[in-house]
Structure formats: structure tokens, C-alpha cells
Length: 170
Image (cartoon, rainbow, N blue to C red; front, side, top):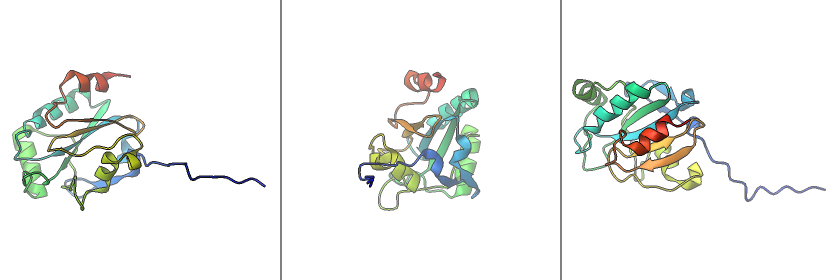
């Protein structure tokens, strides 16, 4: 008789297991991004880091064949994203000509943390590392296979060498 033990077996979810909603309310299946690198960033319209929208859009335009940038507006830090979906879309379009996908406003920390951010911040869920969302414009790097690669400090811009090297590496 054979006995199999699965006690030590840990099955972690992939980034591709999540479905989110666009800013306009449409379903967005993250599995549609298989084969691309992804930068997930929590955004806010009234933050000192808000000008990073410009850099994010620039990188998205230049490298959109290999990397997808996805913005998740969040009002978790000093109420710096108070607007409605319409307000956020208008702000991003008029001020930064944002064309990369923006999702519905979510919570990125606390008791009401969105399931995607629970995955991004918990080693138990992502199988790679624990992290805490420190502020607006923190970036999470996801590889072409849906695995978490790194977390980038909110003050670091996507135009810095570390991130550009990751985007352009094969």
C-alpha cells in the first residue's frame, strides 16, 4: 500500500489566476497577459509621486510589446485618490495622456485589501516574498510566467536602469 503525503506541498497562485475590473467596470482577465512582463502600480492623483504617470506612460509607449503597465488607483495613503472612476480617468488623460490600462479603485492595504494585493504582498500566496505597500506608486514586477519578481520602492521611477534592464532582458 502506498501513502502519499501532501503536507509539505505548497501550491501558490499565479498572477494569471486573478480577474480585475477596469476603471470603466469591464472585466479584465490577467491571464490575457501571459507571455508579457507586467508592472503593477498603485496610483493616486494628489500625491508627490503623481508625476510618475508621465514616466509610466513613456515606458508603456516605448516597450508595450514586452511589458504591460497596469495602474490600480488607491486611496489608502492620506486620501490622495479621493475621486470617482470618471474623475480618475479625466485626470490621467488630461494631465498625463495615460493610455496604459487603469483598473477600478481598490484598497492596497488593511482589512479590505484587494485579493490581488494580498497575493502581491504575501509570500504564503505568491511563493516569493512578503512586502508591504509603503506608499502610492509602489511597483510590483511580474515575469512572463505570472511569477512575482521584485517590488520597487514608490520613489523609484520606472525609467531607472534597474527597471529598464529588467524590461529589456530576455
